Image 1 (spheres, one colour):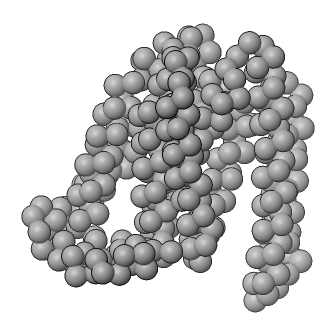
Image 2 (cartoon, one colour; image 1 turned 60 degrees about the vertical axis):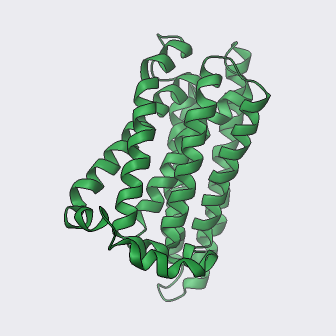
Length: 272
């Protein structure tokens, strides 16, 4: 799925964008603007991640969640502004290439979902001021994230980008779980990773892509269930200790993973 497939009538408009100021000036200095865009996303995603990890009981645990959020809220706002502005400008300079890219569509959808979660949901959750409209915004942000994952999953050459998201989720849970459960969880992840390597490099021949894809799909599903199971167990422990509820924890996980999804989309733009 690409923007060219969804909106074919926009092709003349897209082709003309590069001739519009400031697109041609930006294209001549594209690397500088791309660095600005990457730094903006890192600022936004990193600041959001600090709050999200605190909600999950790790990171800046010596400070209350509310104080952690207030300390980075300006960085989140700055990140949103710079990410949006730099993204629009470099998008104009490479409009035709991005118009036919499934990875770009996944990235854009994830970025919008991440901005919604950062701007309208994370604050109320961190400040314990959730309302009915907060949950509506959360539904929109989570829905956009799910859509971006779907675009990656059906994007052909960009599908391996989902492994970035799954890997990030597994690392977040590894940090969040406590005690002996962490060792059990980590050992299980290592076994699954080893099985994927064996299946794709030793069991099946390189030319047997159908079997390799099936093995990767099955083991990725097992990996997802393993991560999810420990995340749910850790969530119950957090609630039992008087910590944030399941809704807040869901937002915390999603707030980190939506930026990983956006980064994965950006990473695979060169491929499709």
